[in-house]
Amino acid sequence: MSFLIAYATYSGNTQEVAELIQETFVSRQVDVTLHRIGSGSIPDLANFGGMIVGSFTWEKGATPEEVKDFVLDVGYKPAHVYVFGTGDTQFGGDALFCQAAVKLAEFYHSMYPPLKIEQSPRGTQEPEVVKWAEGVLEHWLHLHA
Image 1 (tube, rainbow, N blue to C red):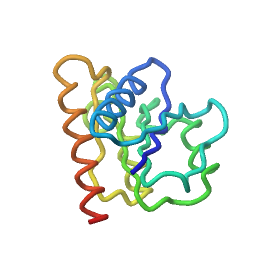
Image 2: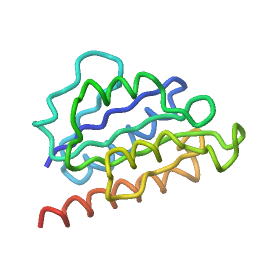
Image 3: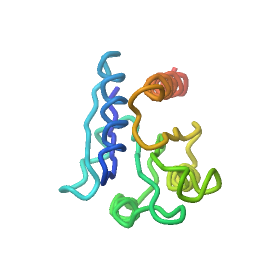
């Protein structure tokens, strides 16, 4: 079993979440490739059993342009896509919090709820990331049992 974790980050928060997910997967003997969206060519998705997409939310609930470009460059909707996002409730409140992740999960018809992290995953949110990652693995394994 192998996963691609593709993420976009400016502040480093989304990258931190991606790395925590990677650590959780690796500790369970899952092969993971990290890909920072906008940095080089996209790995061949045919080599992965699942994909996780991570994005911060930009402006008033918008998905960053580089993430939209990534989606277009992929060119199709892979079967098993999971989504996480970072955001900030001080800009737009709960209504706009992590809307990029919500939109991406809807676009990909993800069968697992997106993870939403307030700014950095450090501290009290770190266990949420680990729990979500473990849930993704359980969900994927259930689908392939």
